[in-house]
Image (cartoon, rainbow, N blue to C red; front, side):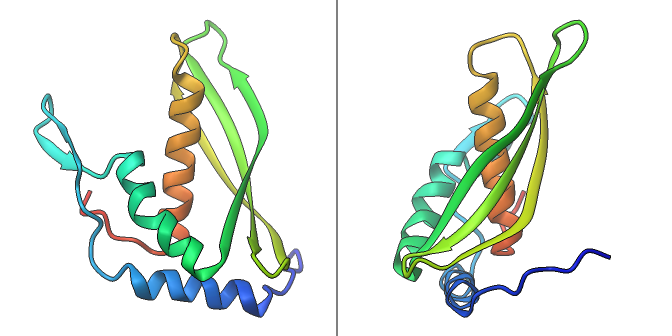
Length: 132
């Protein structure tokens, strides 16, 4: 088993503060008319989560670890790694990664992958309910 670097107290405290401030499900600000459901878009997600991270002094730093296009060019596969930092300068570089696969074929595939990975990372880090 790999030894895990201890999380700095300032980062643990900041994560806890964000978790406490976002108690209820996030507000749904978008609709999927085709499948008939509402959801929290990445913009809505960031609008609700970012201010709470800023208040707590928590900074999330994304790093694109790898990016490949499938044989035949139908899918984009991206692995992002996230480092957590605090405004006091402490960092926690526990290798937290998200692997995302999205349809490839337009100029928005990379943005879609980046948005979805960040949303899923924050959703799991802060244990957020989105009602999805």
